[in-house]
Image (tube, rainbow, N blue to C red; front, side, top):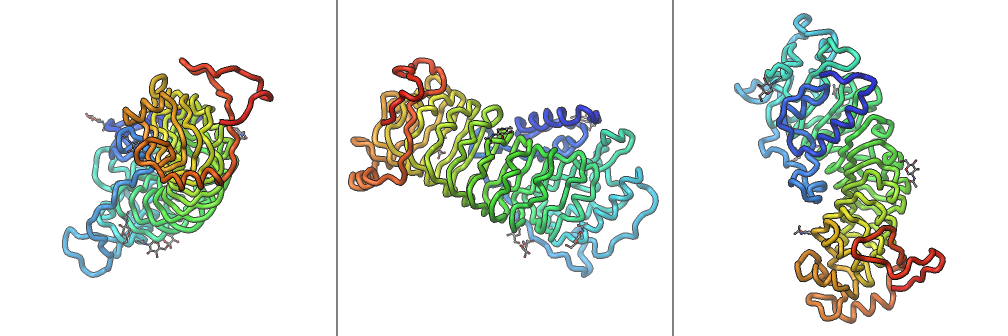
Length: 459
Ligand SMILES: *[C@@H]1O[C@H](CO)[C@@H](O)[C@H](O)[C@H]1NC(C)=O
Ligand SMILES: *[C@@H]1O[C@H](CO)[C@@H](O)[C@H](O)[C@H]1NC(C)=O
Ligand SMILES: *[C@@H]1O[C@H](CO)[C@@H](O)[C@H](O)[C@H]1NC(C)=O
Ligand SMILES: *[C@@H]1O[C@H](CO)[C@@H](O)[C@H](O)[C@H]1NC(C)=O
Ligand SMILES: *[C@@H]1O[C@H](CO)[C@@H](O)[C@H](O)[C@H]1NC(C)=O
Ligand SMILES: *[C@@H]1O[C@H](CO)[C@@H](O)[C@H](O)[C@H]1NC(C)=O
């Protein structure tokens, strides 16, 4: 089924959202650009562990351990890899249409650039049947065809899915950018290197998955102008440097930047993101979680900041992001008390703040969420909290709340008293305590709803 051009974006969005909720899609839709998912079941699986938020940062499927065979030109024993050392003469006839005829030399040129192919997929890139998979054939593995919206009579390559192929190539420039009707490029777990080409000429392009490859250098700025992008996955590469602020202005549904070498502050326009899934974990980001996060409240569901070097106070505004189901800022240098606004996170299932420099009283309204909300796992270990209320006590007993390695007198496995008194004598930063709770909590009434200017601080 072709996507009508006018409503294409809305439909694509619907598709992408549907995709995000399907770990593995077994159906065989032939919707434009949906082919890769239907056939291979290879869609980027956002929650590969089947529901725990941690899946978002999980290591992508490891590369096949088969030999990374070199591609010399010596006569190869039958069944071994073919790397295009002796390209077949270009066929003139037999292409389904001119679009495919133009794409043939592009694929052959990329094939010559491939330096390892442990699964031997490039051996199937011969002949004129570029759309063989459309009719269930086995030629041109990784290439999937469909009818483009503006030319419903011409079958062409709509999607490339190299997930798990382990291909090595020094460049994807001159390749991915040469498919004018491409909507998806999925290349999880390969060994692709070089620059990310300018893909702005690809009208229908909306998913880029370069995760677990060999890309390096600074953030690939070429993705910034991709206004149609819904899914951007750069995790597990060797990118370094700052992240350009306009990335958070893209109307993506999912943005994965984790496990690279990104550093610098998370840009202040972070809150402009439309992402539902956003992972910046396991980088070297510094500075605070931007207060603009309140602005994501219409969309953000799972956000992972864990294992960076974020500091500063925990923003009150996080409590305004009503739809959060997973919030993970563990393993940073964040300080201050937990704002009472966290008690408004009625959908949160997993909240991890372990391994920071948080202090004060653990808000009982937060622990109440295990009863009135959906909270299942609250990790606050390895901080400097000094006390807990009755609801939190219950969670500690039922092991939903981990408070090991804090400063809670009378609790097991706490920090040494001296360490705690030193910390409290000179906390890393003074953070405002905001007593206001910006929501109506079932079973909890703030003592008095004072006007803002009359609210006292203190803890
Ligand atoms: C889709 O799958 C069904 C069975 O799962 C099969 O009968 C049908 O031929 C397939 N359609 C296409 C277009 O591949
Ligand atoms: C092949 O590699 C060269 C050198 O890296 C590059 O310029 C060219 O665009 C590549 N061609 C394809 C089709 O990948
Ligand atoms: C990439 O190549 C390196 C070195 O050959 C290898 O150790 C690694 O497993 C490869 N990664 C993938 C995803 O194929
Ligand atoms: C990974 O990229 C580096 C350049 O950044 C290159 O020297 C190396 O050969 C690449 N590894 C593979 C397996 O392609
Ligand atoms: C909030 O989001 C809107 C669009 O989603 C954006 O125009 C605005 O600049 C954002 N404000 C902040 C503070 O990020
Ligand atoms: C709870 O979350 C912590 C930190 O994210 C994690 O280490 C732990 O395994 C989780 N516990 C359960 C039971 O899921």
